[in-house]
Amino acid sequence: MTDFYGIKKTDQIREWLHKFESLGLVSIDKFDVYGQYGKFNRCSYQSDTEHYVLITNKLYNEPISRKLKGFLILLKCLCLNGTNTTLYSQNKLAEELGLSKGTISRYMNEAIERGYAKRDKKGIHLLREDIFLITSESQLAIIKNLYPEIITDEDLARGYIA
Image (cartoon, rainbow, N blue to C red; front, side, top):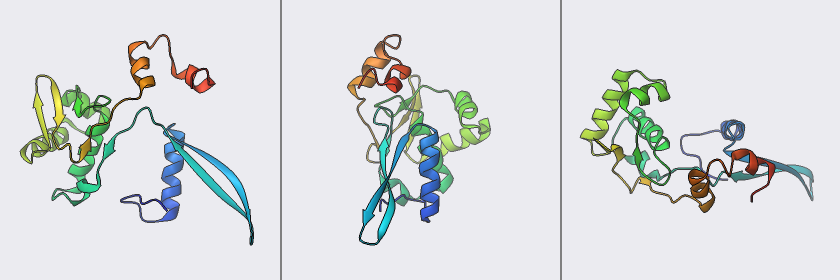
């Protein structure tokens, strides 16, 4: 079974997989398997390979609070594809994440003081590439970003483009 850090029970994993499915991040295909002891249900999972972030498990061992870890994960999710940079202002982060401006300011200051982030005129940058891995966009994602009027999510959903 795949390890999901921070999730302890199988029913919680199932619950999260269904949440991911409802958000379009994972597709779940169910099928029956017949074995020596009867019929069993099995699932296969396909994740969205266009938009994703990678965070190593080193973050779990960092000597910071769980809340700051969670904030850093949320910040990584708001970074531009293939980067550790977000162009959101602190006010926009507060709005987007549903947190108060004071909470965002407190987390940002702590992240900066501890060397996890920096802020400059070009945005907010995550600094620990050993934790916050930089991924490359797929060719399809690059083309969609350059020509959004030509290739739409609906085209992909209808199977017009593989």
